[in-house]
Length: 324
Ligand SMILES: [Zn+2]
Image (cartoon, rainbow, N blue to C red; front, side, top):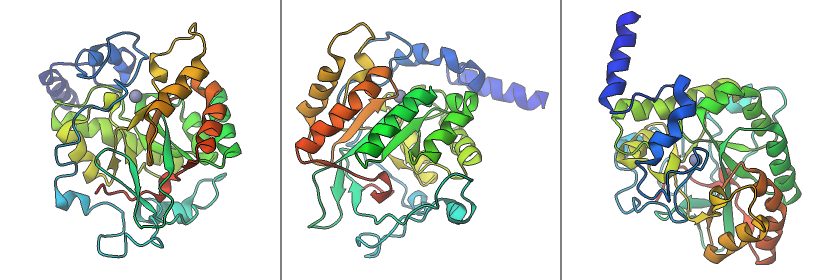
C-alpha cells in the first residue's frame, strides 16, 4: 500500500500540480483558474466557468475513437437510433429499470428526439420535431437542500427537466443531496471530481477525475451519469476521449447565464440573468446556470420568459448520447 501511495503521489506531482486528490478539493479552484484560457479572472474560488462562449475547442473532432464510442449504451447507429421511437437504454446494463432505489419512479421511456451538434446545441433528429427548445443545466452542486428543492419546485411548475452537473468532492460530503436531486427527478451529470481544469492534464489523472464521479454517483443513486461537462469548459482531447470511453456525452454549453459573475450585493440580478440568456437565445440553446441563490430566485421568471418567447424545455433523456 505504501508503495502504491508513493507511486500515486509521484504521478500527481508529475502533473505539476499535486493538489488533485479529493482531500484537497477545497483548495483546487484557485490553482485551476490560472490555467483556464477563457477564464475572465482568477477571482473567487467559487466562481466557476469561463466566458459566455465556450472555449474554442469544439472545432477539433469531438469524439475521436470510433471504438470508444461503441462502448456507449446508446442504441447503435443505423436507422434505429435516429428514429423518434428509439429510446435511451436506462442506465448501465439495465441497472435502473430493475434496481431503482426506493423513492425513485422507474425510469420512464423517453423517446430520443434530439442530438447535440458541435456547438453543443440541441438539434431535432427529424423534421417536424419541435426545434424551439432549450436545455437547462445547473453546475457545481450539490450544495444545499433548500436551493435544490427550490430549483426543482420551479422546474416542476414549468414541467421542465434539467441536468445537474455535480462535483465528486461535493457528492462525497453530501451524498444525501445527490439523492435528493435524483429522487426529485433531476438528471445527474458528471462535472469531474475536483472542478479543476482538465485540459493538458495527464490521461490517468483526467480518467480518475471523471471515473471517480461515475462511481460515486452510481453508488449513491444506482445509476452512473450519461452526461459530462468539463469544469471551465476545458476538457481537452483527453477529456473528450475518456468521456466517450465511459459512454458519456461531452458538452460545454452554448448560452451562458453569467450567473457566476454575479455577487450577492449586485442589484437587479434576476433582470440581468434573463437579459444574459435572452441576448444569446436560439433554438437548441444549451443554457449554463449554477446552483447559486440568485439563480434559484430568477429561475421562475426566466422560464416564464422563455415560454413567452415560444420555447419549451428539452428532456435531457431525449438527447442521444453521441454527438453528431
Ligand atoms: Zn463548474
